[in-house]
Length: 362
Image (cartoon, rainbow, N blue to C red; front, side):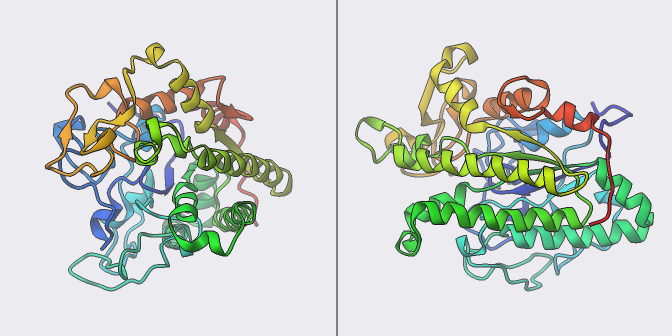
């Protein structure tokens, strides 16, 4: 039940399928989850477009700060993907899109075409970070119009901006011909420099308190394990995921030094999932390699579609499908991120909320 006094005015979500609450339902994108068995453990067994058996990290975060579940932006926007009334966005909105990348090239950009109250993608093109931020800028403009500039700045400076980014870009490096054009280090550097530019645009539009998660053990998801002898993790992918995370942490620290009022909490999901995988029984996990929902080896050859097999006890499994963690993992992540003393740097989310807000102009 939502309390009467939320800890923050709003939560604004940006990212990929780990945090998509249903935006891809409105897009011509192949990455969709608006069908069973997704949502089997969500209230009323609703398959909302979340890539999960139940709730995702933004849902648990909203509950922690006593706000309603954050709605997907495209469920509230008009047929051109624009907001017409800022009121529903005062408590936050989710811009995340499954399959998205920090780099536009990861899914080759975005094209808006009105089609029966939807936004059609050119081929298979989820919303990249740049488009998510462009839509956020329209929310910003309406908040300024409705609340006035000073009140809107105060509102946003106290709100949380939660970002989960990088996984799809790293997958793209190994699964497309991108590796022919960049060394792994050059590609990671490009990801981080692009992310820096995107964070600065959010800062320009009033964001001050950032919750940023690093990427997890990408080489250990079932989809990667299924092609490795013995079901082992893909070590090279984990190595570069770690390198990206290190560079991301350095970037956030530098921006805190450079931008007045910039504050952040970094979630070290890589270390957290490593810890869980090393001590699965501590968290009640029995299966840490195979997906709960899917078909084939490790339930990872075919994704979670209505005809896929479904494990009877989702809380036993670390992974829901070949790519995504189970609801139980999402709960664990938020528990550590919100008020834990491990796996968050330099402060946890609760401490970030308590920091004095500064709505200093850009």
